[in-house]
Image (cartoon, rainbow, N blue to C red):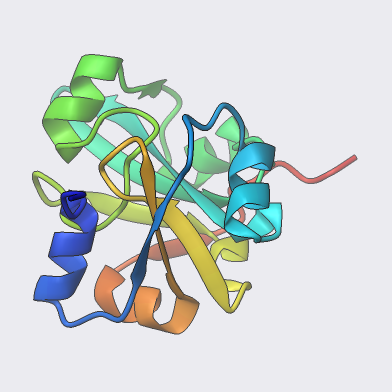
Length: 159
């Protein structure tokens, strides 16, 4: 019997419709994850934790493979210095291991930012808090449970 991933439990507590997708084997890339979930790669939402000050963190969501634009993020935050959180910081701040982070059911409240492309697909998938599983849900249901999110253009433009 498979144990429900922590993000699924958090979504269930919020009465948010979703499904857990169980991967058949460890996923090594976004392309592989999208193919197995039968989704376009731009439906996959990555959640990236940044340290912007001493014990001050933000979580940034980006859809698909585009890299995050550090300059756009710095401009939005009005900061010149920030770093990606370490593996240990990710686990302690979010409650989830790297590669499984979601903006739901976090270990502590965080300032959430999202690239505008996160809200384009009708259905999305994202980390479940557990390596072998992902959460799939309608974007409109995702937006209902997110709470306050700062939306901007944080992904690098394709050349």
